[in-house]
Length: 249
Image 1 (cartoon, rainbow, N blue to C red):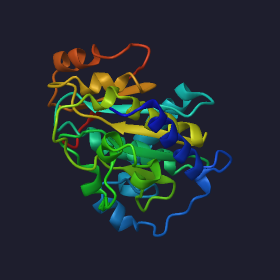
Image 2: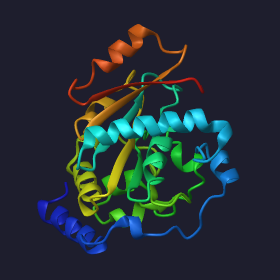
Image 3: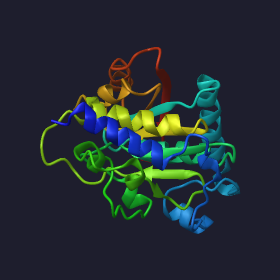
């Protein structure tokens, strides 16, 4: 078991890595994705006329979330009703839509430990591991698992593998330490958690306890009204932002 002293030292190392008076908005990507690469990585291109209706839809959701946030940066959990509903696509593009605003930045965290996909889709080589590495190893720093995505002001924390043992990762002190560290260092940084499906495991509900807002993703024509209602009932009504219907499933 990790001692409180070890956790305190870990938090101190995080503070040293991220000075409180520095904005992540000022951090530049070493290489930026081309529009063709963004499409390949299932990211919307802001000025793509052909995709404008979908771009506008994500901008509208972003505006609603920022309205809920007020003057605070928030943690948004995006989860599908059932596997294959397209929540990872929605989480990725919601995070990107925030990062497209030059006054804000975003971190996308792949919390689907059983079926991680963000690092593959975004072609990110997780050389230092990811979320699982941080949760299992007190020596791992936040800076070790934050990866550039090629989208300015958007960072990715990949899942970093699949669990080899049963553990309550998302209710652990390390998970809360990670979220607090990420959101407190930069007031212009917004967190998006790409969570597992509501149906089949309690992880989505557990993650909602450390999130400020929950967005539920339903596959259009795939998830029934009854399935959606049962999934929504898992979350605090005060945190539940609504349902996004995804046709691209």
